[in-house]
Amino acid sequence: MSYAETAARYEAMRRNNGEPARQITRDRFWHLLEVLPPAHWTRRVDAETFMVIECETANLHTWAARIGSGDEATYWEMIAPNDSTHSDILRNVAVAS
Image (cartoon, rainbow, N blue to C red; front, side, top):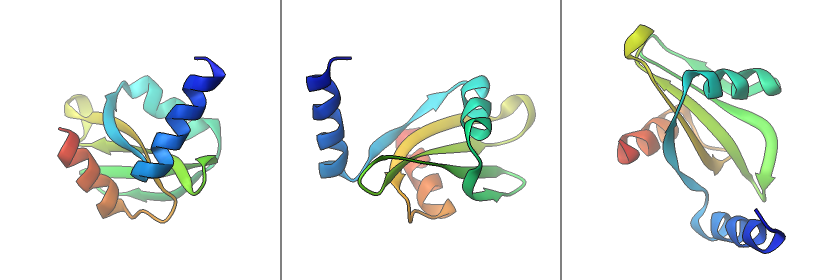
């Protein structure tokens, strides 16, 4: 991605207060979980969310979510504000699915 494309993406993120949730692989979810210590990590039986502590731009961070368990689980990634809650992230996933 060129500098101009990256700058345009970050400007769109700031304008839109993030990026929508997109489905990812289990491996990508685990990479996000293990790359840096997770923040705001919330685990429930049916769902799990956390924020990657490194900022993308402004107050926006990468968030990841697991919905379901076992082989039926789906995994999600999105850019959202650092003050998002577990419920906010689950709502973003629901809109995207």
